[in-house]
Image 1 (tube, one colour):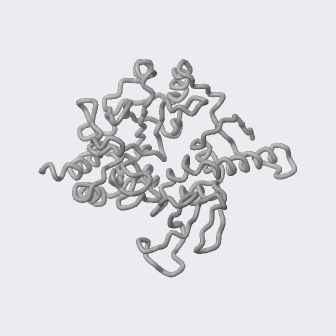
Image 2 (cartoon, one colour):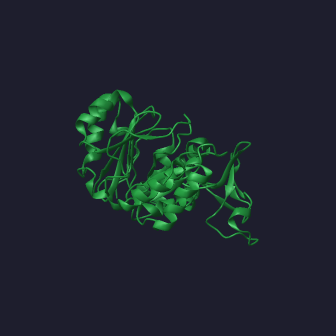
Image 3 (cartoon, helix red, strand yellow):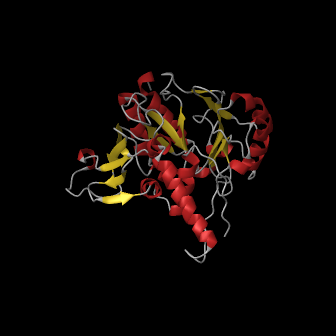
Length: 329
């Protein structure tokens, strides 16, 4: 194939090696998430499905052809087949982490840091962001429900392509040939990062409270957590709304607007012709097509197809504040 078919060639090679791929929107697209969000003309919803069940080879090839023809790129759906990626952004901790981690035979680079490709037990190895109490990003552990952009996609900040850092790449290394991670890798990473400001006591990990509602003090605490998370989210739209990759998302005065793709169009319009009836601003979150209102947690539940507890945890991972509150059953 010619150079003009670079993405299709890469897509077919990686598919043949067992990986689940995603299309990535063009790096110069006029909306949030450009160059990093899964999608074609607009960010796609429900792309997390490809973390457990991959697209057909025909669809994957079509995504590659579209990237060759119209711009855009390719991403890897983490979790499928046990794929796990460790993304190290914090340069001072690089040497310590590379010494501690199993040797990865496939690595890539972008604007900064490095991404290491592994396989592992994704029931035990869950996605996790390691940050300091000041919200400085250290390491992202990408497992089921996450994705990473692959070469030769273009980085939206530099305009330069991502590139493979090792001689071996996902084009010639099959999934079962990736280095295997131990189940406790998250704990090992956390221990190594303590020297660089990571404090596990500031992580926000919540367990839903089961049992007596409303009248118990534990349930009241749970209600307070949801209330505080919703209030914080309403004050920090930029931290989380763009990461929902809502269809046709764009900024407006005081917030954002998008299409509520989780419901049918009331007027029978096709997806491409639907109006941006979903409004997210300081006055609240409302779908003007149905007059339905949402809290931030409600919106995350709809957009990411999560239950309430998982939606809360996702939202808290995006927000810039810190208290540690752990609820036990």
